[in-house]
Image 1: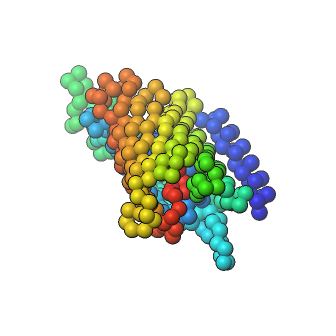
Image 2: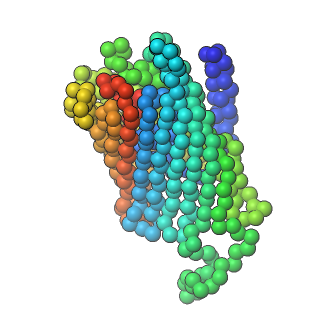
Image 3: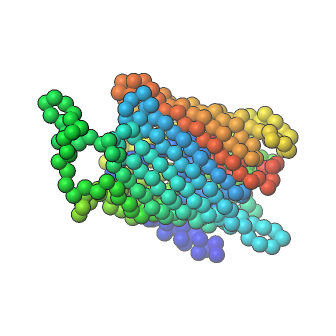
Length: 349
């Protein structure tokens, strides 16, 4: 079975890298706390959670202007475990929904995704490799308050003027297929066995490049987006761990978003039992290359993780958005069977 998995992984890597060479459209929204939105980041992450897990993110960007953007996602992961006396994690299934809108008169987008991931433990569970496939539906709609060029005259915008647009559908739906790979070393973050935890993943979204044109007989291909993400965590001492993280989301012809930074966590409560059992305080900071700075703080234990982040724009866009950035809230909750295990199995915020 492992040989079949390796062959399938090789084929999937070829598909992902080939897709990257053909990217040609605009960039999709990325969460600042990208590691806290696992199924939105990489479908292979459905295969590394040991417990039933629910994740959510809410992001509000540029709230001081009319074209403010709000993005949210909610997802759930159910691990698949083998039977017998020695149960092993075999992968997971997941579902998720997301919504993205950019102010009055904008195009609004809502989507549903279903995910399956197969994972295998290697080297006596010191390493884990996961392959994920994801499919779903997306609906895009034009806001009723949309303004068209034909409604403008010398005197400005006139809502009483009918837009000179023909063959337009206000809503369009299309299927979407995504795939991903994820590898982790010391996934349980057991620092008595190894002093380092390492993880890395790659995913390709919109593999099928569906047509999302609002016009009858029109053509607009949804952009493919390649995401590379990873990092590692070093064991400082019994209570303190730290390490770098990165995200690269690339779209050919439209540049790329690159986030590089550092995360650190400090153990506040050692007792594994109770509401605050084995609770960590998490600090994170990233530099979004040529665009902004992100600062995040969170609290996490075996049952939940809560994070808050704020983006500060450092590019020329700061004059356009009146100096306002973006804030984001993430919340995850899980049915933890082992409260002593360091969390997350997937990377932290």
